[in-house]
Length: 295
Image (cartoon, rainbow, N blue to C red; front, top):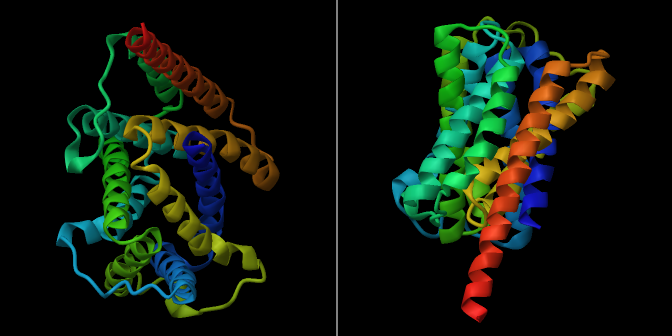
């Protein structure tokens, strides 16, 4: 079930990205980031009031509240890389960063996460996944490559911090702080770097109201992530999210832009096959352990 939830989360991320892209085109990067956080914070605040939860009733370790801050950093890194390399390359390098970070967290159990031992037999699956990543990279810029890789690292750490905060509070409370802290950081950045954006010069409401739904979808992305992060391997979570993003992204591109990316399709297929190979190896290893304990 948690694998399916991860796949669904990846699909929601693709739709959210399309909505946020429309918002960015209309208002600018920094202004759109603020609007997304305001929309998300309003929704999660309503949900918290409805559930009669009290997010400020207890204090926890300060670093657990940094998930939202790192989410803003992720947006900044992606925006800086955008235009230097293709979107496919940003997405592929982000996956590479997520995969490496996920494997390290799984192996050593950083941040008190469950440990998942790495088996040498999984190298075949990893090679297939790496081929998928490479096939999606069509141009190279050192700064953009580094930023895209850091984006992947950031994503894993951010969702892990959110999940650990959810364990100490609740899924809703963790999501609330994700948007609250993110907004507190996004607003001054917007005033500092986004003064010349359209939102400041001439604010208008778009007739395409769906572009304002990105922040709302983001709430459900964070909620679902908080539910799944501690339940499955960080490495597999990254791959399922990516698989959902790639294939749903291809469909969205066809509907919105009438563009089909063969490169993304090939890369997605390689990643999906590598993912299935490693899952089958895990299943076989699990069955062997069960058989040994029962005999």
